[in-house]
Amino acid sequence: MSVEQIKKELNTRWPNDATLKLCLQIIDYIASLPPQERRMLTFRSMCRAARKRRVDSELLTALNVLVNSTVAALDVHALLVDNDQTEHELDAKTFAEAKATGELIHPETGELVPEFEKRTVPFFVPSERFGQ
Amino acid sequence: MKLGGLLKGMRQRVPWSVAGRILKELDLPRGQGWERTIERLMDGNYKKKAIIDALEMALIEHVIYGEKLVRVYDLAKGEKESLIKDLENVEIPKTNFSENFPQALTPEELATGSPIPTLVSVQERNDSICAIFGSVRTMQSREAVSMEEMPEDSRGIFERFDEVVGIKHIKYEAFDVVLVSRHSPRVIVLVDYPDGAPKENGLGIHLVVPRQLTEIVEYDYFTQPVNLFPLINAMYKTKGEGNVVELAFGTTTASLKHEKMRRQNTCLREETYHKGGKAALRTQIEPHRLSINWKRALPSGASSIPELSLNTTSATAASPHPALFEAEIRRCMDADDFSFVQSKLEHFISQRSKR
Image (cartoon, rainbow over all chains, first blue to last red; front, side, top):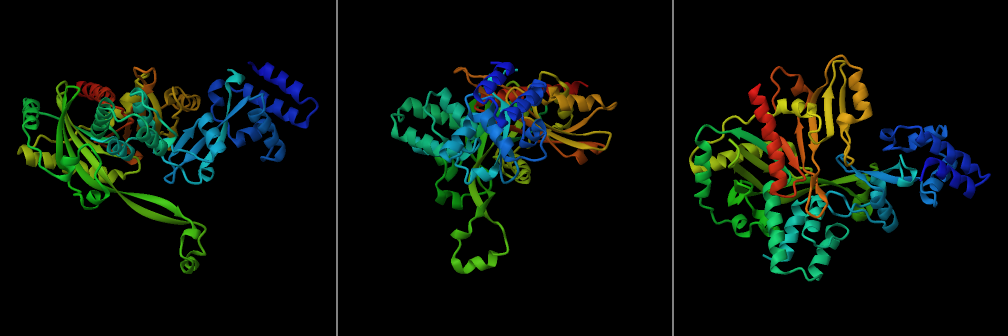
């Protein structure tokens, strides 16, 4: 899968949709970055990609399409922040499972993390489909 | 030894990321987190002697080598042989620690256990002889307290706070080790250093353990620990020596940087921003914190990732005679992992001596 194919899929599935323009803008922005600089794209990075000052419902909808639709261009990873500010990176599978089950197991202690939503910060990484 | 006791011992001290790898190598099932993993193992057909023996070996190796704050001491000529002989002939006193070893103490035993490191076992591993000391230590844990958990009449006191945090003092059984390798001219002291334990406690114990052994063998083998500070820069500058996953340094532009990048197979030495920043300077950066990990292949095809950290402050780095006597060695699965990291330390110590 390449960037061009992802864009083609977006065009086919959401033609004339307002979200499409934003999705393509985000894809182009990420594709313009060298691979080393695509490893941790925060909501702020996405605002820059979408040329927006702040996260709004339009941007959230576009991100939802890029993450959760069959296009699956982006994976959502997260940082888990401990009380002592130690950060642990959660991969896409772990974070998705935690969201689906409502339970997150701490990667180092192996114990349940209470109220993990308050202690995790999501970020985006291009998926395998995105390619290099 | 029983399966339940072994798993409890592992849960208390082995980081989950390491425990998962140990279970995988032993071909044992792993659930989501400790709770479910222990349930699966206890309910399944995993009480055979071979499994118990393998888990006991894994626990003992973690007791000796897992999550440690380490000091290295040079030995004078002939002292290594004499220390090995002393350790081979030492008598283990009968205590709760030695009788339970390597199983965890009960909560009652923990409550009354001695904080002074007491010799519990002497073990031979990977051509090393290890004297293991047990003691009870305390660690603080901070937990948010919800208003609902508080008695109604006391809630008023906390009304003006958005969040209330409670502090728990958690007692745990710690194991510290004096290790002499037959292949090294040095002796190493390994103090238990679980995640979250204050470094000051570890430093205090580093003073006590050598004293305890000196008292037992009636000879002081411990002079000044080796200064590991020069290793920070030497290891950072050796390209290909593991992956640098954390680095803090000062620059002559009067800035202090602290970089972390723990994603697998990435190295800060090669990271774009790091390289760009360095390239913009005419002077060298001055590192004072360094963590390096190495990916080591395991028989199952998975890998272990032991990590070495040499951490001090920018103030120490700027002083005329910077010194650092401790290394943190974490995420070791077994004796092999530790020996590997030890060999790296010793290699760079020897390089320093040659200069």
